[in-house]
Image (cartoon, rainbow, N blue to C red; front, top):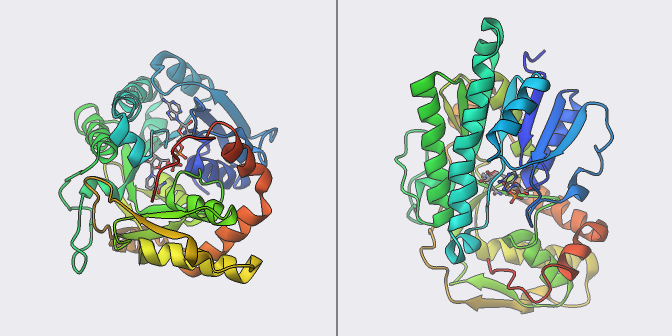
Length: 351
Ligand code: NAD
C-alpha cells in the first residue's frame, strides 16, 4: 500500500492532469485538483469523477501561494503532483510572457507554498512527502535524426520559449531540494497523446480536421521525429514516480515509440479511411513553412524508470492511436464545443 494517500494535483483539468486525477481517484487516493481553467482546462474532462467523495476541484492559480498553502494544510496533503503549465509551443513563440508567468514564477510560488506546508509536518510525514514536478523531454533540445537518446544526465539545451520555461522550472525544483531540503522528484516525458487532448496539438488537430474535410497542415517535410506515449501509460508512470521515486531524483518517461510527424498523420488518415471511409484522408495533407527553432528529433532512454520502478507502457503507438481515434469518434460532445466556440476563426496551429 502506498504511504501517499492525499494528493494535490495542479493542472488537473488539462489533458494529462485529468488522466492522473481519474487514475488516482480510481485507486482510492484523496485527490484535490487545482486548476485555474485557462483555455486548455476543461471541466468536461473531469466529468466521470466529479462528485466522487475522494475528489475535490478547486479553481485557483498556482501562483497564489497563500491559498495553495492553506489548501495543502487543511487537506493534510502528503504529495503534490505539479502539472499546471502553459504547454503549446506555437503559443510560446507568439507570446512567451504567459509561459514565464505560469511555468517559472507559478512553479516557484507553488514551491514556496509546498515548502511552508512541508516544514509544518511531523518528522515522519516530512520524510514521506513528495513534490513531483511533471516536465518534458523538450528541455534537452534537439537530437540528430539518426543517433542519440536523452537520458537523466543529458545536459539541458531548450530551443523554444516553452521548453526554456520548463527547463527553468526544473532547475528551481531541484534548487528547492538542494537548498531547503524539500523532497522533490522530477519526471521528463516524451510527447503524449490520447483522449481529452486539446485540439491545437498534432494528433487531435489532425483527427478533427480530417473529420471536417479540412487541410492537415504539416510543418516542413514532416520529417521531425517524436517519441509517443499514450496518456494513460504516462499517468501510471507518474503514480509510480510519486509514491516510489527517490527524493532528489529525475526519471525519464518514454515508450520507445519514435515516429516521424508524417507517419503519425498518415496513420491517422488510414485509421479514418478504415472507420468512416468515403475518401482518402491522405489527400488532405498540406506541407507548410517549418516552425522556427523546430527540434528535429526527441528520443528517450527509459531504462531507469523501467529498472528502478518496474514501469512499462501497455500501449504501442498503433494500439494507442486506434484507441485515440475511436475516442474522438465517440466523444463529439467533448470536442464540438471547443471547435465551434472559442476557437472559431482562430489559428489553431499547425503540427
Ligand atoms: P494542458 O495544456 O492540457 O493542461 C494544462 C492545465 O494547467 C490546464 O487545465 C490549465 O487550465 C492549467 N493551468 C495553466 N496555468 C495555470 C495556473 N497558473 N494555475 C492553475 N492552473 C493552470 O497540458 P498537458 O498536456 O496536460 O501537460 C501537463 C503537464 O505535463 C505540463 O506541465 C507539461 O509541460 C507536461 N508535459 C506534457 C507533455 C505532452 O505531450 N502533453 C509531455 C511531457 C510533459
